[in-house]
Length: 583
Image: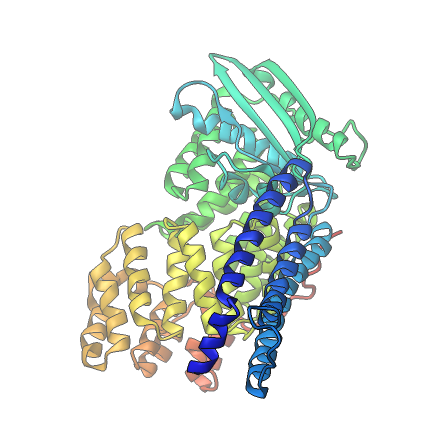
C-alpha cells in the first residue's frame, strides 16, 4: 500500500484529479448560464454531467500511464483496482442518469392521460371589499360558479375542498394544475358595495399560462345568478363543452332569490365547509325562512342536518327527520337537486335503510357523476354494507375529483390497508401527510386513531385520540386512558371501567358499534357481542363501516355476531354498483 501511494504521488494523480474537477465545474457553470438564456432542455445538462463524470475516470487512467514516469507498467493488483473503479463508478453513474430519464419519460407519458383538456378548478375569488368579514360572500360566489360548472357532463371540475386549499396562496398555476389534475383555472375577484357588486373573472391555461378569456361584470345583487350563469357559459364555450339541451340551458337557477336569503346561504356554505355544522344549519334556516322557494338552500340545509349528529350532541332521530323534510322541500322545488338525494342517502344509511340509501345515492350520481361529495357518500355506503372492494374503487374516483379532501383520503388509506393494497408503513406515511395537511379535521383524527390502534402504534393512537377529543370539545384524558388500557394490560381494568361508566365516554357508549370496537380492543369480547346485539334495525349507529375492519375479525365467525348483522340487514348486496369512471 505504501508503494502504491508513492506511485500516486509520482504520477501527480491528485493534481490531475483536482485540475479536472475545477475544469468540469467551470464548464458546467458556463453551460448552465447559456442553457438558461436559450431555454435548453434539462436533458442536455444531464448528458454533459454524465460525460464529464465518466471523463474523470478516463483522466485518472491517462494520468497513471502518462504521468511523470509514464513508461512504467502497472501490476495485476493495480489493474484490478482500476477496473473496479471504472465498473462500479460507471454503473452508479448509469443508474443515476437512468432514473431521472425514466421518471421524466413516465411523467411525460402519463400527464396527458391524467389531465384532460376539458378540466377546470375554480380558485377562490378574491374579496376586494376591504373587509375580511366579507370573505364568505366571495367564497360563496366561487362555490356557486363551481357548482354550475359541475353540472356539465363532459367537464372535470375540481371539488371545493381542493380548490379552496389554494386560497390566499400565490402558487404557480402550473403546480395548481398538476396537483388538482386540471388544464385550466378560473380566477377572479368580487367587490360588493351596498346592493351593487362587481365580479371580474379570467380563465387561464395552466400548461401554457395563457389567458383564454376574461370579463368584468357590474350588476345588482338581484341579478347575481344571471352573472354566475354568464361566467359559467362563457367558460364552457371556451373549453368547447357541449351543453345538454343546447346553449340556452341555464346552469344557475334563474328564479329571483331575495338577496338577504342569498347572503345567509353564502354564509352557510363557508360555515359548512369549515364543519361548523350547527352554525351552518342556522344560516341555511335563515335563508329558507326569508325565501321558502330557495331550492338549493333547502338541499344544502338537508345535507348539514344529516351531518349534525356526527359533529355535536344533536339527537339523530330529530336531525334525520329534519334532513329528510328539507330534502323533500328541495326536490319539490327542483327534482334535479343532486345534493338533496345525497342528503337522503346519508340519512337512510344512518337509519340502516340500505335499499333506500342505495337508490338515493345512485340517483345523485346519475345527476352529478363527478360530484365529490356524492362519490364520497356512496363509497361510505358501500363500505358500510360490506362491499369493501367496490367502495375503494369509488373512493379512488372521489379522490380524483377532490385530491385535497382529508375525509376521502383518510377513508381510502385505512381501507387500502385493510384490503392489503398497501403495507403498514405506507399507510402510516400517507396518514401523516393527510394529518399535516388537515390538522383541524376531526374526521381525519378519528380515522387515524383507529388505524394506529390496528397498527399497534399506541403512542400515535393516543395522540390522535387526544386531538380528536380536543377538537370535539371532549375529555382528552378519558380517551387517552382507553388507548393506554389497550396497550398495557396493567391499565386495562381502569380503562374498561372508564369506558363503561365515565360520563366523558358517554359518546362512545351511545354508538353500539363504536362501543364494541373498544370493548374488543380491551379484551372484553363477550360484552362486545352483547352490545352488538343491542343494535337497532332502524339505526342507532353511524359507523357500520367499522364492522368490516380487522378489529371485528375475532368475532367474525361467532353465531351471535352473525345474528347481529342479520338483524340490521347486513351484508347488503346492491343490485347495481356504480364504480366505473364516466367519460
